[in-house]
Image (cartoon, protein in one colour):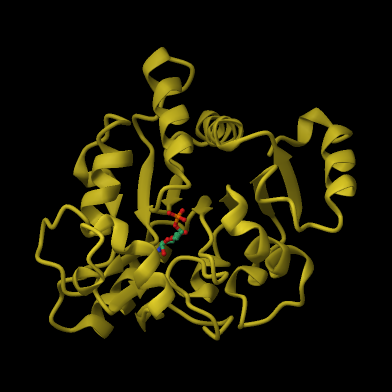
Length: 261
Ligand code: GLP
């Protein structure tokens, strides 16, 4: 696992967007796994700017959703499908055909989960998966004690996650669904490159546990330690609880340029 400490969220967004641009130059039809939440927005802004300036061509990129609420009406603005279309697919100039995600409104949720896992494999697998981290260490919607081998499935949100996400639902926790579909931790680990961005002091404890603690289902993001190519980008505030911060700074400063992200 590589840990990169950057000054702030904008620098993290720029670094990761450049990594995605390098991937698209190598593989124009790369399948990009995208996360929702506030944290990845600087990545999408920076990538959109690169596309608009002509620094990279994303016309053939494909986008895969990480997770979804269950039971929101089709087209609900806070469904993750609507969110990804609004924040990633449209700004990049892609059409909806370039996008894939689980069906949160399916009658048979389990079948929809299995179908999405199959669709990811049939699409050739995710090339680069962007991840955020919940304050309780979750990735996607894999809450603490999710199996490290889990596949895409339905989960019940913790009260803390519903409180954290109420800001997207008029600060009304009663509007936040209890159930979600999420790529499993086993599914996420199949992506070729995992890139987790964490910013702000509120994420410092979860980042320290994920990076320097034991691999444990209690901290789902610690599963990144099992992946051969995982990059954790944190701003100074989110890095404050890392014991090895100086080592991470030193190794990144001396990283051979040809390695890229
Ligand atoms: C939600 C999403 C996660 C995201 C997390 C943190 O639970 N399902 O993918 O990482 O929120 O969100 P934020 O980046 O807004 O703190």
